[in-house]
Length: 183
Image (cartoon, rainbow, N blue to C red):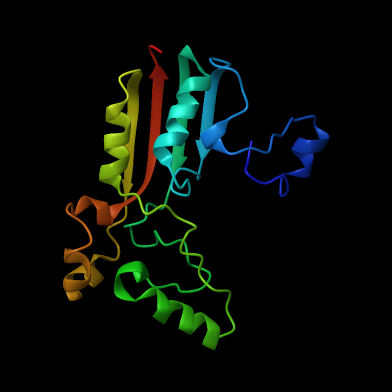
């Protein structure tokens, strides 16, 4: 399932895999349909991760499992997802949107889609999982990236007002496994 209907591996298509084009916030499946749901590199893009998780839980069977793996998280070094345009760690903190897109225009590079990521922090994703009493959390693994903290140290004023938790700056990606225990 994806919001688009192109770009799928032709081997999967020719192998008989059934694809559905739909929005995760309004799934066209009946309640409690699936035993296992997985999502790879999507939750940092959903405009409403809370709605997405609610829909996932709606279509999951009780005692069903869900595995989520995604990143980079927005406040991490490459969380803007603009590595093709501006390969500068923490560019979302160091430069204005206008400055970055002016750079792109000047260099003939595709403009940055600032709506591509939802801007959620590690703290927000933790709270999202904690809010659902129907979830038995089996794994919540944070992959950290400490390799660009010299920028945080060199330009603290760019970061101070943007986060209330230093871990948000180092949390690059998440792996979450949970079981649905109740409705």
